[in-house]
Image 1 (tube, rainbow, N blue to C red):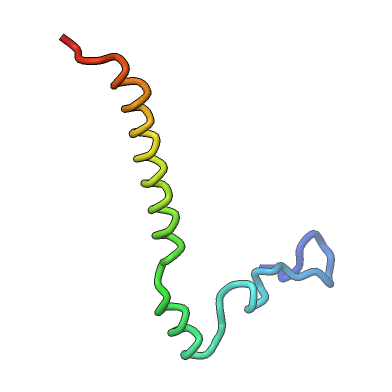
Image 2 (image 1 turned 60 degrees about the vertical axis):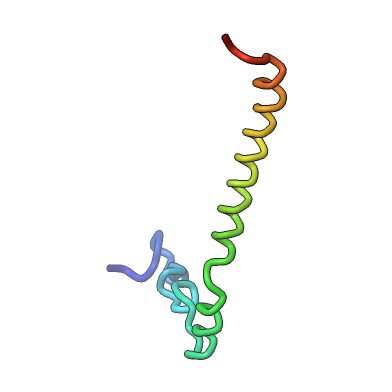
Length: 71
């Protein structure tokens, strides 16, 4: 596999650079990052659920309640 793209000898793909592929720190840094856990994913999921509940409540009070009982 050639290490250069488009026949340019000086250019090497970023995938060949170790610092662009993965985090390379010492064990303490990796453990500190892993200890924080997936806070960002939980934040996005929580905001999504909150928005969904707010939309449902808005539909309930502005559409269903004004129409009154069915039957």
